[in-house]
Length: 199
Image (cartoon, rainbow, N blue to C red):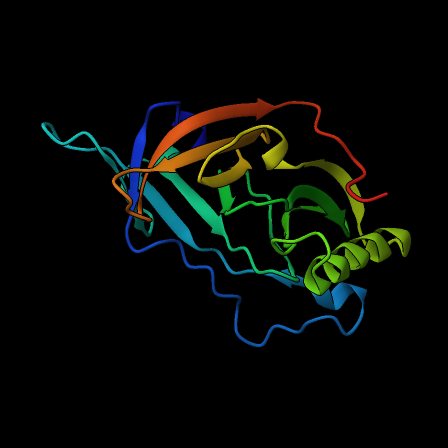
């Protein structure tokens, strides 16, 4: 789905994406404990029936497979992740977080490294340290990463991975002051994304 959104497109997400971490998650007891594997949360982009012009984002697998995607929640202080399965994955919102592909035990995953709104926040410092320690200890191998706020601007920034494993960053403006009605302001496909994330 993320591969089809272009500048000027408007989507309505009501209710907003489920950002809750899975029940029973642990936090910051050891490097791997900051990593939070999330269950699949499927959503679909539903094209409007004329004269309507706004695409609807709805929970569940609806319509054509090409318009379906998985949502990866953002949780400040945690590294949320899902396995790559040759489908689209979207996550957000981004204010300075990183989106990264990593490998563990032969499987590749997409991670949202959940920094807080301030670089000096304890949650930001802890989650960065957890990622660095996991890499240093050989628990994970970095594959590629992108910081979406380096590429797009907007009142809300989402990003994700296409079925071809291309990073796509999207900057949105809210329409009419509604937090669920968003218009694509800027879009950037990022190839050859940088790694490592935190030196």
